[in-house]
Image (cartoon, rainbow over all chains, first blue to last red; front, top):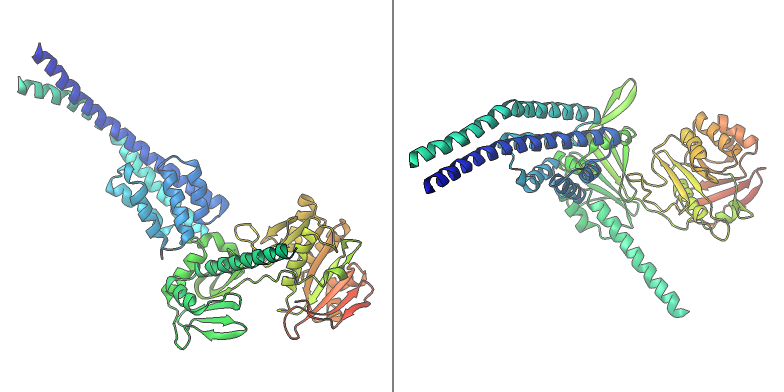
Length: 172
Length: 333
């Protein structure tokens, strides 16, 4: 009886771990989608109002959820302080400090930081085009992730169950 | 009574001190850090500071009490490309794209109404200036409001507590913008000579209001609506249609469209305060379209400014018939 209970628990735990892995992947995709949404809002705000970055970030910051709102509003305050010689530094520091909890993969973190290198440095037309290019790259990343997501989730679930069974067999 | 007046005096002094500190920090924070340090050490009093001139590869200079001075004193600080770029980043708050329209005119206005003039390589598109690239010169002109400079003029341009259609004629640099600015403030707030009324200001070059992000940095009064960076002719019509002002103020009218819009505004029941470049009444009345308005006696007062001892001296005031109301009068400020 104890063996049966133990086996069920092991299988349940490993299945749970597999399911968690799948959910994490799904959540990560949601995070990337939200980053794309925030970037889209920044682009729209820049194009529509033509306001300086601080105002764009403040306005966008009011419309998005945490931790993006904190990140954008803090950046706006730092821009107004004018203490950094280049905007990219404010942008990169903000990502490292305020978006740490998103646990972005290094390639996505670099992709996000790249946006800071051209923001504010170009004329409105070129900035708009660069932002669009950036959004297209984000779309590509999201698509890549989405394509493999279902297969990875299924593998995660199967591995969870199978791993549990394997462990039970080994232990028995 | 004495105690109250003393308290008021101290309060005014404190407000003045705070305004000076604000002005100092507004100017310092738009400079590259290395230049910020120099100015911080060399300039204690921003009241006498008129301009900070930066040219890439050239010494840093300031204009102080009408004197061109090299800073730091006794040394030379050559402005580098990096300092220029950093200064431009701070001036534009890392957002040069947001100031494209202003840059096209060769200047932008920063917080506090200070004017930053720029020069560099001009980019043309379809025979129009599109932008300025490779900015190599920056001239920061410190804004100085002269509150009360129109005090003595106001009784001459008002009748029954109503302002008259007034044209200020002045050569460049004689203080017409400063004078109009104070007139707007007083007319808007109202005082013993004029009943406070709504004033519409069309500020094509952000000189009157010194607007930063749409908010006037200079005191233009509590009943003033301002159209910033708007062409004068369009702006006057927009204001009449949207804000129903009792008085419209515009600086430096010149084109045919401006003057037609002035005439239209006068016929809409608005009182008009405008300024024009010119030496005297004769010169103003010889201008093609403006001359017509003067001959039709559309303006009720003409104020001619000169630049004798200091800017803002009123040389003559005329009424609509061209009779002199005042001549070689004391300085307004």
